[in-house]
Length: 81
Image 1: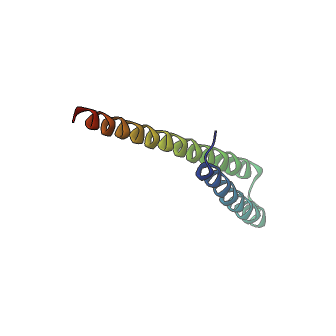
Image 2 (image 1 turned 120 degrees about the horizontal axis):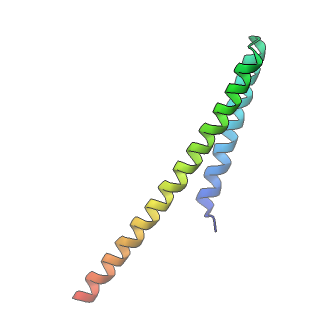
């Protein structure tokens, strides 16, 4: 199940990506760029957004594992006493 923090991150990332996407699309059309450049831009935005999302998920998982191992170490220290 997703945590509230994860959902908030995804929503904010999506809104920022959408805003940047629209702003650059308007700029590219206004400057009369070719269709290939616009397509490359669209692919770039989607790939970067996915990379950031996956990176965040792995970072969160790593932090959760670290907390879990710290709790286990703390528990074993208590039992040794």
